[in-house]
Length: 557
Image 1 (cartoon, rainbow, N blue to C red):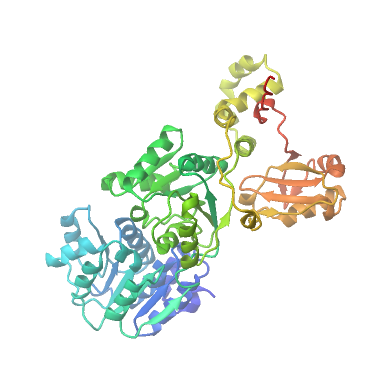
Image 2 (tube, one colour):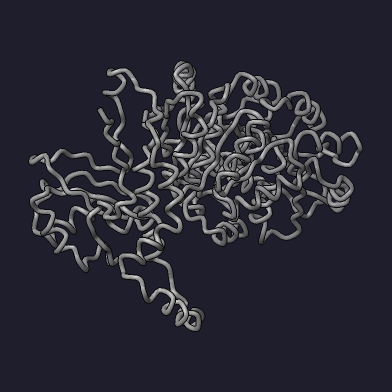
């Protein structure tokens, strides 16, 4: 299926092509022809990040007469951030449509400026409920000729208490309009709205109703309440390239966790309702440009975050409602990508987790908070991998090198490596050298159902003895387990039976082979390539004694 099959006009197809869209998403495939070719109201149920804006934006643009200047299309959404995002997306889709004027209206911005923009002639208004109702009452926004109304993230608008505002807004629109309701979940309140304001709507559901996206791995850790913040730090440290959202329940907690992380040296920032709009915009801007790595947010403040590369969502505290978990986890795995949603709970919250699991239609995989040694190993190899791949600007750095060479001349190669690593790595070694296990043990029956780690090929070798290797390429290079197995067998002449677990990380990987073939593998893999990419293979054990786990001193008798 392509966009050419959806009966879109040439101007829209050209804009879609400029944006790099190749194939329509499932919600777009079903909703666009239904809206363009039909005359009924529509309810679209799909997770965040599945292309809902284009699903209603493209057909709305095609149906509107842009030779007229009065408002014909209205999009209502819950937050300023989402309002700005939708407006920006629709403007991009209107790139080749002559005379199109799209205006976004939301609180916290100049109402006079919004009045002037609407007065010029806004065929499409994208708005938050509160500000739109204000403009209606001031006789600025005139909706009596509106033909198409979209209620986007309808479930969240009701969660935020906009029921009365939505009722008042829709009462100012003509009864013969078409209404398109889009939502990630379908609670009773949304059903009531659809029955009250929609006429025999066609319902389109992508995936299971009220369930999360399939390409999200849902993981839960069980810890003592006093260890919650320490567990958060370990998770962040275990994923050196994490680009994530941390959800807290209250504004106060959000600010406190952000301040703690910043104090502990993490690249983090808070996003919540107590911040001024200018500070919220600044935080969002820094997060979208990756100037910050971790954004700590409340549920409401995070609405409208449309970032496609978020790797992890961490639920510092569980939400009260299952549908809120669906919205939280939907911040990752957007635009067809995969992601991980992590939940931290104490032993008393297991029933609540089970309730969310049932209602949200997801399966949580129990895992253990990484121990200090594993975190140090991950950080070390990530740092070394980045050093190997860094590009050197020989021309710019050349004049500084003679003094550097002279200063380092008295150090051996081993000393130089050790000192270089220690500059960045000492803080991890010092912090985790005496770290303890902070996991709460599950019952044996629960232990039996522990999941296989994502990206890991589990296999027990016949000899029972294995040697672990480090490989300097990973998932970001599209490395596949099959390619690793094929290369090992071709170059080393060993059978696949000699190959054990393969663990593919983001920037590097690990694999195991039987000890008796390890030396042959190490030698034969020198200068090897996988899918045309030069690779480096070495034993995974760290030779630096500083990074080994400290041995416990024997008590004197």
